[in-house]
Figure 1: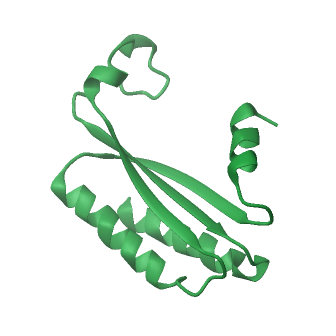
Figure 2 (figure 1 turned 180 degrees about the horizontal axis):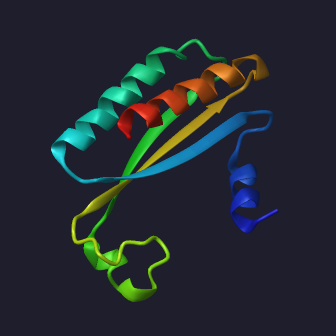
Length: 114
């Protein structure tokens, strides 16, 4: 198991189920509004999932960060100059019977943002 997977497992409450997903977008008002609307719409479909914790984090990624070694940039951002935002969705829930609904809500959220 990787160190990251071990760390996530250690921080998850016993018996909980989890999903973590990320997407990187341009930082502009229309994109951020799309994220907000997609998150709220997806949450509305699973509010009754047992033990649900559904959170969204937006992490700015300015060009100064990813331009440091632009010619060696594994993310393929060497030709970019705009500020980006990493969208992180975290979902934790407790009942396996909710798996399909939670995964579907997350997939729909990310799909509607792209």
